[in-house]
Image (tube, rainbow, N blue to C red; front, side, top):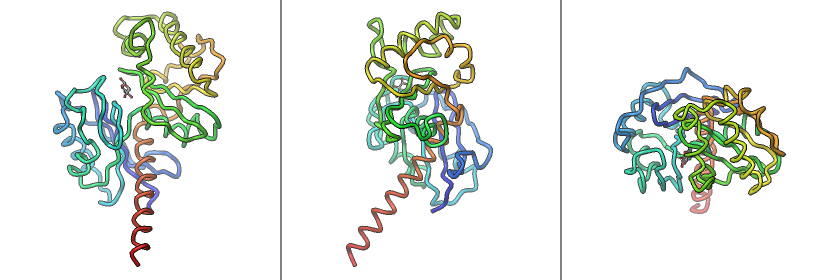
Length: 264
Ligand code: BGC
């Protein structure tokens, strides 16, 4: 099986994709970004994903991984905190597989970023409990135990001051309320101290676009757990989705072989 898979990151404003070399975790070609259609309903987004893939000259059998900013259970979207409600109940996996002609695997966006960080970034070879959070429009989370993902943890929705935590401390809230770094870091402190109390992690990794500016807020936090910025940054979703797609495609190929061997 080839060492390359295609990764696509579906976000609120852009859909980005590129082939990824999974020996190094680097993009194998420049990524392409197409604005997310508005309203971002399933049909329109599926067309954009198909358009994005067809802009690259890739083999038909190349597995494609796609991130989505919602709970994804067995390919089906189960929530819609920051996307159109019409996604709830949509089999995103089946829709995109049918529309693109590729074997598509869908994964929560923060889980994908976590997969990238554990494979190629700050979480590589870190034993124990690792929690990655993404600070963006919402707050996503990925929980790992000895490198194994526990999917769909949704730790952005724990309660802080009787509200959804992400409505209090997401990057979008810092931006909307014009919070200075100290004030925002104060909110992050409350959030991470709460998560630390609940999970006793060995490492926190902070992703999302704002992690580029980690020097402005991470040193202001006072936690028992080490907290570090993600290394894969902007490409984390693409890389993680591609890594997942390859691993899943390998698993299905193995299962098919086993079935065929049983028939003989
Ligand atoms: C969603 C998560 C998502 C996160 C980051 C949250 O509002 O519930 O599924 O991972 O935003 O996009």
